[in-house]
Length: 322
Image (cartoon, rainbow, N blue to C red):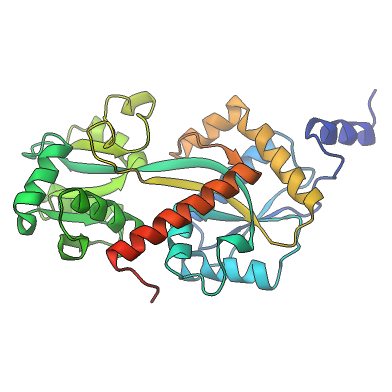
């Protein structure tokens, strides 16, 4: 019969490293409880615990402020070497880095650990809208930009605004002059769409399914590189309709810049094992996320490319940190 020490040794060998699991694993959600950062931490918490990849339960702590800026600055400046601490990020973190909302620190100042899922932008109209496809909406915006009203759950410069701005750009319209209405969240924006107060809603693919089943909306395009699986497989991407619009909203984790290589590699191995399991696929789908698995160096390269792309967009759209 295996002793506990042998079982622990076997577990570390499975993870491909002799480094021990962290004694006090902690996931920082850079916001108040609820919302995307909390969801991301709890996905890791449940997945790692269910897969028995952690010896101790993972704690989720909350560090709101600046849509991730407070956590980013705190981990780099005050907690740079905590091998048991991971921090949740979203695609919005890259946008904020690109426009300087994280202060003096850049995408090069942390260790990017793992991406565990993604959501994608979606361009949504009412089911009875005259716009039958993305071309209809873009041509209407090109012809009469003052008559087409976009709306979403975010102010100018936010991710949701950026999705609308990219559609306006495809129509040859300056995004700063498009008609856009900002709402507190996606629920308010959908209500406004149903009431005819806005004509197009730039939301997320994860929001679509429940509304589709009710037959009240039409999705003109999913802003993903390729068609999504399952119930959304019948909805074309913007790219396949001839428009170069991709808005991928990744979710994952980073660590402090001075975390030891051994601790960093342990976490990479743990997440790679987790991502390979069907049980994790189910957990991720239950949280409205689609598969998107990157770790370590591949994730770091992807993040740098994303930030560079967003910097280019920010310059084009006249966005600066406030």
